[in-house]
Length: 430
Ligand code: EPZ
Image (cartoon, rainbow, N blue to C red; front, side, top):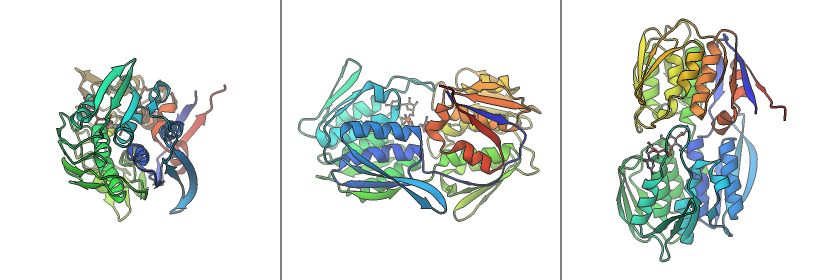
């Protein structure tokens, strides 16, 4: 398995181009299953999660073509999807276990083909990750759902019908799935306590371009009037707020200055506010965010993760890396996932002073220095936190299990090298 080697100590300065958002692209890709016409997605990030999902869709009969093009001087990729001959309505275990978000095929396939079989994904490193809200909502829309041999078998012989659904939690995945299902349902669906993440707004924008009738964009109450069929469309995936936030911390922690090209400050209000409170300079321009840690003293600050527009759980680990070298203490409370502190023992091995209280809170007391070590994490964002720690640690840090990073950070080493990091990938020998 590949590793990343970092020699800490370089200040990072320059520009980083922010890629299309992974968590927006995944449901957008699955929206292609809702129509027999062509769907063109531009600015799709080059990530293993996208590759896995495309493989599943191809297995089902979706015809996919890739095109590489230039966008603002950077290489980008687009995909054209044509799902006019879907022959497979089963998402097998081998695909789902590699790619949890393949549950996004549920809503579209059930709505359009009235049947879907989907291997239950099981838990993962950050928590149990149930999909009960997805399934109970589809049942409320008239689906019959059975669990057989580890698979969800869902049928809606007369098609899905509109329903008034109140989510028990503002789940991102369930909101996307039920939105897609409702576009082709018979009648009106109303979702209350829907998630409001920008990735959902991006999905709504695409679905409306395809002819869906969705109201309530950006709010927690969504109303969807079902239509007979959807048409093809072209869409540009929005910029990745979590990638932008991660590199913002790279600037802050190395006391450098990075301009995050294409980053959208309106999607990062809480993280940018926390950075400013920690003493980091933040400037917002028309198409970028400039994060300036030059000559700044980082001060500890408390963070509580919450549903959007609250502080994103997907930036918790990276902020914790910054807190390890802040002046004073910081309290981190994780309210979304029950097990999202896997980075803590690894950061402590690098010299951080962090105490976990219960499973939801951690106190970080800033230390003067971290020292390099071989480390690994079992989650994408935790792995990036270790990269951040490596960037300022004395000596060499080796981050193992790089496949987690390849799931969510496009051209990681290239981007970091371009701003001055001493980082390289050590390829696995086999
Ligand atoms: C999405 O996961 C993201 N993944 C996650 O990003 C992110 O951490 C999460 O939203 C929260 O922002 C993708 O978009 C692919 P949820 P998702 O459904 O949709 C509970 C990353 O690093 N829940 O909003 O799976 C659940 O257990 C990843 O990029 C139920 O109880 O998250 C959790 O506690 C990691 N039943 C909470 O809701 C359900 O049916 C929020 O989960 C569904 C969720």
